[in-house]
Length: 334
Length: 288
Image 1 (cartoon, each protein chain N blue to C red):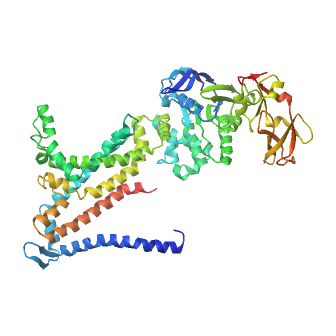
Image 2: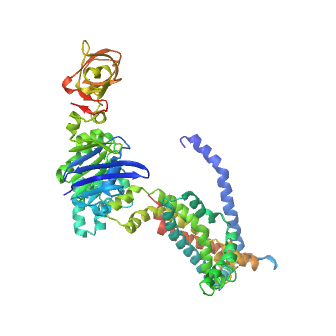
């Protein structure tokens, strides 16, 4: 069980309102990702749920019971921190045992859970080492192990992968997703990386300046972003947002087209422009295109084999059914 | 140092300092050892020839020797206990966000800048004097008979005075250590269900281990040789004669340089015993 319900929760630091009152329900067993640019209040929101910060107003319910004034340890939540926050003077075994030791779990039960967690996380050979002797990925797994053994009703992750290198990050992403499938426990995950959000989440909460911009599954956000901010934030490379004459033709303030929904031709098309930098990834090439009115540079995602080079003239045609339209307030128009 | 050339240049440039330091240490040490085997009484005949181990035997068999060793150890131990325990408490308090933090921190460090002689005199005359001292007034205010601090509770008084001087040092070192404690570790422990007392015992205290070791080692070095605080307060009376003070009395009051030098050699040995003992207990904290 692990339903988390935020009811008109707000947070201010002094006079600065970081999170204006917001409502949010995280369903039991769901993998929810809070995503947004840095400073958008996503970590603060997670810390409010954890109980590490006091909420300024509103209520938090966990499993149907009011948890607003319940201390962090009694909320039944486990948290994995960005810095891992392992206890440097304790061995891996003692680190993992710490929450159980605090809770007074019998020694043989502790041992059983430690071994189970170590096995699940490939830590069996490292149990007697100190955190300082482990690599980043192993430390991350110890932090997760310390969270698992508490058998919490929900896991909270605060940017857990941002200290890892790119290859390891992809691996750990899989492991955490795998873990979620296996445990089927509620997970709340904070990240600024929209790729992590898209790949891991059941549901994404996009935040900006403390406001929830949109909540939805990864594909909902990709196909139907409710405003310009979400449109620009979700998807990589970013959606091209075109203002001016082109948008006027469609009767809106802004039109958006994703780089992968632009047809590129060297002979004819709707828009004529010049190729700038081309980023060759092998499978794809990202073209940065200049000379397009209302959106400069524009990005197009084309086949890796397309023979274009800097300075070439190019013609672009948007796939009209994939076009997003936004009004003057930046809201989606259908 | 990368190259052969720069390494030899570095050796050449360091040589004067090394020679100076070695000389600074070896000359007095050799002279002390030399005089300790002499019967040398400056005002009573001067150099009266070799004495063999007489001085060593006389120094140890004197009734003042073992009490002075005990006094030394009690003062060192007492001051260490008080400064480390109160230092940890003060460091935790000073680490809390509060108004006027910078000012308070400077004030806390202030006693360290007062010269030992001055602070001992201030304590003796302004606080501990049984007639007009501040503590006497406090006792009288509550209707109690003022304590004659420096005669009735002489050792305690000295420990208090020296602790007051060294508390800022301990606090300062421990405060910087506590500031480097990762806040997320404390939060993780809080999430893990550790109440404040256990967070202190399992997270903060182990984190401070190395700093406490440094405080204990450095303070021990200086506390073994405290002198001014005793000289200006009790003058070695009322059981406050430390080994250092005993040596001072032998050399300058009894004018027996040979006997004092033998005491000096014993002091070196005692300091080394204490040092080995300390390194054994706390030295392993400095590794890793």
